[in-house]
Image: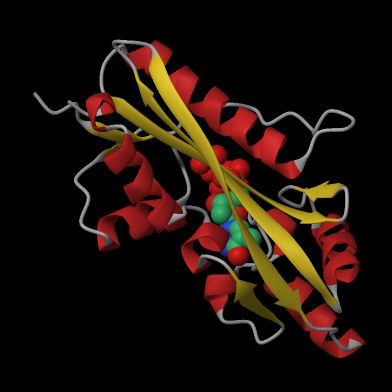
Amino acid sequence: MQAPLILASASPRRRELLLEAGYRFEVDPSDVVEPDPAPGDSPVEYAIRLAWRKAHAVAARRGAGLILAADTVCAVGPEILNKPIDRADAERMIRLQEGRDTEVVTGLCLYRADRQAWVGAAERSIVRFRPLTDVERAAYLDSNRWEGKSGGYGVQDRDPFVSVSRGSFSNVVGLPMERLAGLLAEFPRLAT
Ligand SMILES: Cc1cn([C@H]2C[C@H](O)[C@@H](COP(=O)(O)OP(=O)(O)OP(=O)(O)O)O2)c(=O)[nH]c1=O
């Protein structure tokens, strides 16, 4: 029997991506409090660990189902950018990324709750971030579109200063759909 798919996420973007791709699933957010990266954490290590924590929390609570969780972070060199805590933090993140190619990593975890079996993966994309004028930056920050988004921007919002220059677009939005399909195909026993 097929294990029901449960999306352990409060992100409306992840829900939309899964719906658009035709998956049937339930949503049950994890409520995991995301710790800051540990010193020396790479974006990949950090994102996979958080995805695992989110999936594990929901698996432990429910005891059944195939739990899907993800975590998306941006990175500029060694610095990992999570969701801005306020406007000033969003401005710091935006300024740091302006004029650069930045990295976006999504960690994924598929966790089979009744067997406590799981697989994890991470996908990397590159986003090109053009410099903003002071007026553009202030208008963007006033829009509050940075809220709840790693790195303080949403590539899906069509703001003209960001574009995906390499890798998966859906990965940047929060769920690498090609990689997810690949994992489900590679580990069919997780779902059956
Ligand atoms: C870089 C980028 C991130 N994001 C979003 C995706 C995620 O929702 C968010 C990163 O935070 P996450 O901690 O990955 O996810 P979340 O807190 O929104 O939801 P949950 O933990 O319950 O799954 O940033 C975009 O929507 N567009 C972008 O271009």
